[in-house]
Image (cartoon, rainbow, N blue to C red):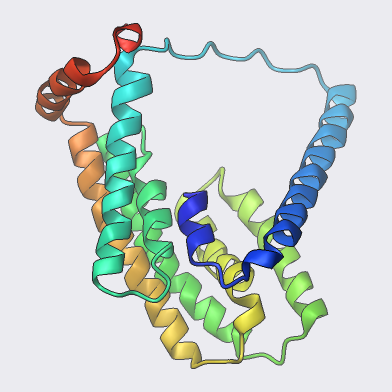
Length: 229
């Protein structure tokens, strides 16, 4: 996923160390915020017991990873074949949908992703129509991030409404105002719909007992013996 996004990032090779450094600084800042927030919360209440992780079986570790990777790759290949300008948006949507814990959750996330993106594009259009500068963009992104973290644990579809303009600002901040706004928003909608459809098909396969039996048998034949647990 990171490779797909990086492949479509408009930067020069000589700028790569700079952007890697910026990414590292952002990760370190996020870790520091989480660390100090955790200390603050632990002073106010005792930590909750953690649930045990599922066993590292072949189906859980290998089969799911291979199927998800194949369908994310298919979504990117379709975007490339259709010559979509921002093809990396397609696998992002595909991955968000296919990771549902059940087929019903996959279907629900697909609906939430599509409808939420449509409404989010209207919000993005309203925000991007304003006279924005670097400070107002930063403030808007802070507010959107707060709303996302507040809503995502309550209703994914509502969170996607605010995820959409945030991701557009993150990915397109340096190119805003250099092209038609309608073209950008329509491209995001088409990319999201295509990725959600491929993710839904992948989710149907992932949660199909017959598919898991047939494909899993072939994967076991091709996998090293140490992975067959």
